[in-house]
Image (cartoon, one colour):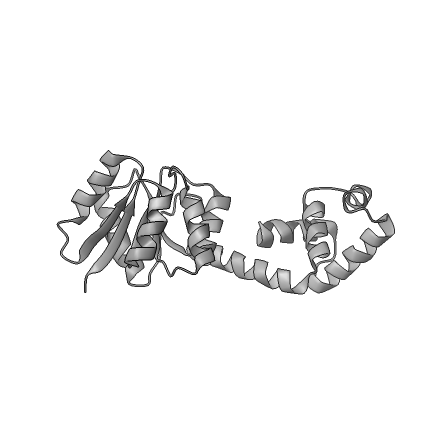
Length: 211
């Protein structure tokens, strides 16, 4: 079975290097090479590849923007993300958007081929030393965020984030244009819903589960 690939990188030399690495592999076939985000979306819509190998930093549309647009259009993609570095928040969002492989550009080239095959087979590939996170933890964090969003109202979620930022009741009341008494009522309801007993526990929960 041939794995069809769309390759995306804004540096022609890098793109050529990836192509030369992949072309000798009998089970891998490059169906498009792209140098910017807009071209990536066009290629994905037309070719429907098995795997998109995507550079995080792209002109016109960045790698994250490509992922967001693809998700919005309902494009079914398995993505391997190439990056020199990635922060925790960006990594979390990338996983939410369907990325199942993350490769640092400094890694050995043959690792990319292994990563592509692993992701195509339904596996996951994350360079462990990126942030110390694992896919299981990232996916668990997303599940907790979704569950919390179901339990709490939008106003309660907003209040939780303000409290986790260290704001006191008076400051929260000012930000939300409500009274301190209403803040206290909201907090007690939130404590009951989340099973916490103090502001410290609530702040820890928010940092752990909501990011």
